[in-house]
Image 1 (tube, rainbow, N blue to C red):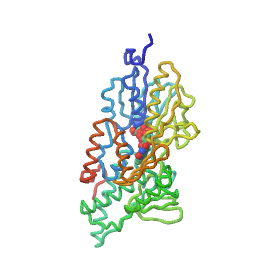
Image 2: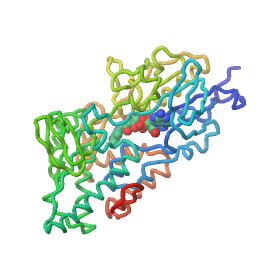
Image 3: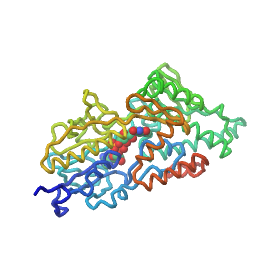
Image 4: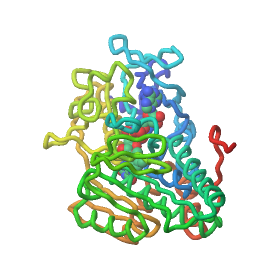
Length: 433
Ligand SMILES: Cc1cc2nc3c(=O)[nH]c(=O)nc-3n(C[C@H](O)[C@H](O)[C@H](O)COP(=O)(O)OP(=O)(O)OC[C@H]3O[C@@H](n4cnc5c(N)ncnc54)[C@H](O)[C@@H]3O)c2cc1C
């Protein structure tokens, strides 16, 4: 009789051990694909929570609370007896001994290793960018940015009182991709709410939100008509959009452009791109290709390895035409699921199959009422319908029904009411003198 993976009762210790580094979309998808299987799984993350990265800009601009977009990894797998969570940062991987080494020096051995470490902000060597610009990739980034923005608004009111005139203020957002578009749109909403609802004495005419990009249009991954629509929407909400601008330096109070112009600004928000290289454990960096991503074969195994796999943003996932998949949540989820299936194949002595990406489209919001979405076959949905599609999709992908329901209720309430909770400045380090 042939045994299915589910029907072979073995002690936990004798089962193949799969170690997953990273509890983002990709790592969680791998662990979900292996949960309740005849496999031992350890998922390691430097944070004890999974972050719903696409909504970080909402936290950064005080639209949502951190807890709306982060979920304890232990809770996600609380029901799965074969999945264990280990809190820690993986420092290195010893492939010759099948070991991962954590920051505290402890070692964990594996039969299969999955690298799902995601990516971090890429500053492209722009002087001062890593020091003075504010990236948006982690929940800490989002909290830090939110506190900074709210503090700046408070300081500006005080400055106006001292000077006897409403003060001038400039925010610069670098990068016209979805993150830059979403963040600049939401930032103008935050400013309007701070003035209308919280009574901050600021002159909206003297507050600039400037979105800059080197490219000649926004959202270059979308069709041109979606880019034009995004630009029009942003401009109508008060964002200045500037193209062909290369950033050559950032200091504490200003941003410098390639044409020699220096713009004084209160904050630079960095949404210019990501790199996978910095997140990778040291020993794997040598295997990386474009964007610091690990090069993998069609079945998602590291080139030349029998038992190390890479998925999501960390991996240069090949497409059939020789290009690589974009670094998007659906790619992370689909590659994670595929990886879990392939590990089960290998453990059971079966052949692996190559990954094929099913394009579900891309989307970006431009404020509370507008979004652009490019669906498969080039169909573009804009405006309120696009926004509703964006909302539905993001809620659908939220981890767990309870969270989906909670976020839906929170969002609906916040959409109509703009409560003040997310606009509290609760910081560990940033305080006023
Ligand atoms: C601001 C922003 C907005 C975005 N919006 C969208 C969107 O609207 N739609 C979309 O499809 N995509 C969007 N993306 C891209 C999407 O978020 C990523 O493609 C997706 O998060 C990748 O998932 P991942 O699991 O590979 O990596 P991540 O989600 O980054 O997860 C990686 C995990 O690995 C952990 N980790 C890293 N290194 C280590 C280590 N050494 N040891 C232990 N743990 C480690 C991290 O803590 C993290 O939890 C957005 C990205 C950003 C930054």
